[in-house]
Length: 410
Image 1: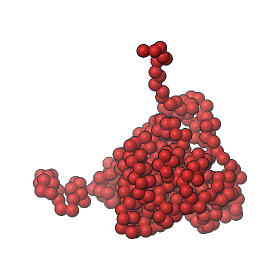
Image 2: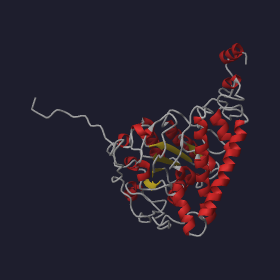
Image 3: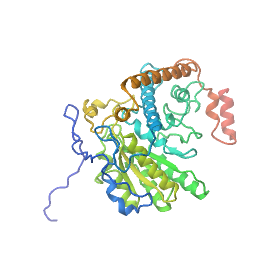
Image 4: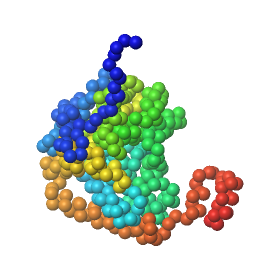
């Protein structure tokens, strides 16, 4: 044995701990409009640099600049702002409902509204999302009734899932929203499998998989990339990098890859990073990746650089692992404010109109909440029947379940 230094175990550390000064100096932000827009049939090898940059459209003055601008009309931009405002108002009311004991659990989207709301507007009817629990904007921007979402959160007698899912784990085949799984990362391989099946059937529908930065450490993430790249599945694989898993910073899952998008390079996938707080940039990148998938050019891996402003869930206290002022220091700003400022700059919006829209949206959300609560909440009113737990699992109920249902008297 030769004399060598003892081995050392490395544990990545965040830039700052609670009580310290927030530091995002490691987030390299290029100027808006400076990142090139390749053709959709670009060879993945020729766009490797896009996995290390950040595609941005809105500059600090609220102007839309560069080659990724122009994918949305004025009306679509105003509609997108309303979608994000609706999701934010919905979040606030449901967070309050959880604190009031009307539901057991809730997860907010604060700061991440642009990611799901903008992506949804780039899809076509029949496309299927395989989401995590923080993509409710896919439903709101897709016209799914808020009352139905609230019924599911309350697990009441009108819950479309009959009380068989945790709150916020929605499901709607008609709206292209596959059932959410609490076992994180499973939806990534499911998205690839669904997309492969669509191609096998010579269909025209594509799939979109969603995962958080923390869950990329799961083996399902890597298995999805293997199958997607091997079979050129018509799928967009989305990584929402909001900087934090439930209590660990993104560096734990990212490892030494530099960026999450860079993980796709080893699989030969085109990989892009986009400013997740820029509604215009998110939509433009989503449109590019979706068109690529639908044109039989294969999958794309997209990393959305954003920030989770609120707690991971109502069961989490983020002050235990990050500074309370960190969200205010996030350099990419607030997606709602940024789009609002862009519309005001172009004369399509105003502060007064924004306040009026906030009041109208809040009134709509409260009206929906009152309607949902007439059907019951966690501790009051109607509930799903116990009989429902036996239904909808098998095409033909097996004998042992029939006996159990009879024994339960339902």
